[in-house]
Length: 271
Image (cartoon, rainbow, N blue to C red):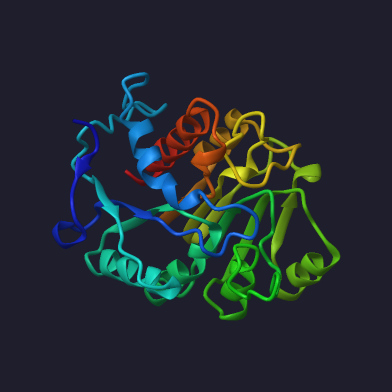
């Protein structure tokens, strides 16, 4: 046994619904993240580790944490539907991706319930392009769609190290608080009063720590630095996603274990 297997229909209030989003059709470079959800769950349940988080929360058969399996996706925007169903149960959605484009339809559901929602985005990339290669729903664009649609009160980005002139203009246009990696320090405080959604792109980590991503961008956070930021986060977190793990580029399942560790530490903030 390990994480309790459940379904959206059987969720109770304040449950945390882990749900797989097997979607990578908006990836601009490589496919593979659609395969990630099951690998992350397998890593969480691996006998090579245990189910405790660093604050000693035991996730083994924790009654509030339910793995609801992969959702069925008929088209890109249908990703919104299972999130709406989870929220209708007064449960907390925790999505495992999947490419980062999935955060836009997720936010379409989240914003209905939380009109003052703030987003914290851990990412090597700003994902603020108006379009990429003619695709306005590319995984390089979700936060442009989110912000122009008014789905978030504000957006804080951490770890960005691929800034372009266009994305700088977009960040200024939408009032995004961008903490570029060149400006990052361990003393940065993350304190929020309004409900917060955390989206964690695995490529925020330096590829030395997470080689199993589609876009290797050197100069990122260490695993410990990322975990420390999560642990210091002072916020009412109402939803999360972990995205852009690409098992086809992984080395001996190392990135799956890193993704599992990030998921576990985020779960510790939710329980």
